Length: 320
Image (cartoon, rainbow, N blue to C red; front, side, top):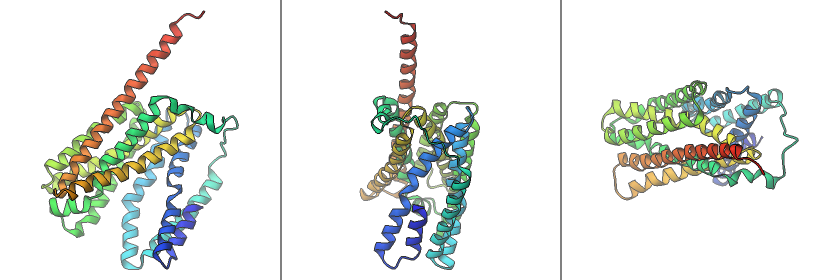
């Protein structure tokens, strides 16, 4: 409902203040939508298929990047930007209707008090996952926030080529997310995250060193964006697995980390430009932030291993 209201305000706004209010209101539900969506899927999907189900949910966002952005751009250029946000409001109404009729009521009647829901934060694992999520977005967005000048001024593409480039990276997001869902049946979310992290770090380094070559820039941009969305479902599942009793708070924290990472990444990339470096240098802090995420994910693995050893030791220790 907030999405409908926000985009309606945006569509019929007559001042900058109304535009800002509409954007703020429409942005409020973003984190809750994906966080609660992951929780719902974890409760209605059969064991072993949860990661694939969450990947399916996230695929909606990847399809929006592939199709929605070009359509919105076309409507804005040919008619008015108001038509773009009016269309979004119509889609919001369709989503609201679908939720009302198709999503079951799965409220947990045994849920503890608000204070008890914070207990999962006593463990280091959720904090490590929050950090991994933050660095995940920060790493890619340090570069992706400047993709247009990167591709135009460094790789040599024309401005007219940017629509094709954005569709290509959008396709990478779709395929990366789908591949992650497929692999979830064979590998654990943590293992998928570790391998994907390494791929993103290498692709960002390649973007820096081979940015002057058009084919290389397109290839590694595709791989990098595919990796970002291949990480989304595994990280959400890891968070739900380590937020027992506080799943909703954990999901909200994950979305906060996601958006915080976007802001930090864009700032780090912009810092390189402020210091006078060329646009391809934004890939260096991007790779560094992604490497930090790789270290954090390794820390998650160590934390889980130590927890498993400790649990096994407790079971082997004879009582009184």
